[in-house]
Image (tube, rainbow, N blue to C red; front, side):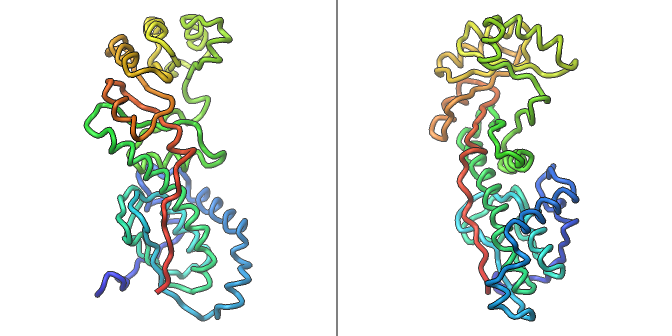
Length: 303
């Protein structure tokens, strides 16, 4: 058989979809179905006048969802649910699960079902896949750019409201590491917090130790090696090196030694990330992973 001919397909239901995700797919079965159903309702996929007018209800179709460019796939469970909710009998072969690196023209999914359902679900499925795969792919590029160093690529809270769990999941699919998920999960004392404590690093850390639950990790943003030394001496578990020169970062790494984690942040780009990693920092946070990742070029081709 040619690679365009379907192998015996496996039937996929929405409730199976989370099992086709990367480790730790963030939505429950009910949450997955609710989100995808809302997206289909927003698109009025069940009232697709173009498809209803031009495609006979008995018409069947075979289609491939393919990568038009290299990248890492993320969001397959959401796409499966979109197609399944429009045609409960659609047959789907999953060729690429979340976290897989795709090459140009490789198949992600092969579908066989009613043409109306496939057409009406197409855009919703692609919207989920293209956005999340774009995040996973950009994360992968950063990870590859600094391969061989000790640093990990970390995301931020700069996420689309309501999409944080999915976008952070996509970062993991690309090989990145998640920072705190929300404001309650960890302490991060930034410049404005510090200004409200009259610039006293030790006082700010003391106050959060007294307020936060025991065991809550404390990170503080610093702009100079002197501030880094004060934070380490005050017992911070992590120091965030904000927009520092490489020389200053190396000095902060020496100050921290094994006493706390060092994280570089601020204006990190693909062409600068390796040099930053080579300063010896433990982590590098990149807001662009979630707020500026371009969509991965994917398409659905009928056969």
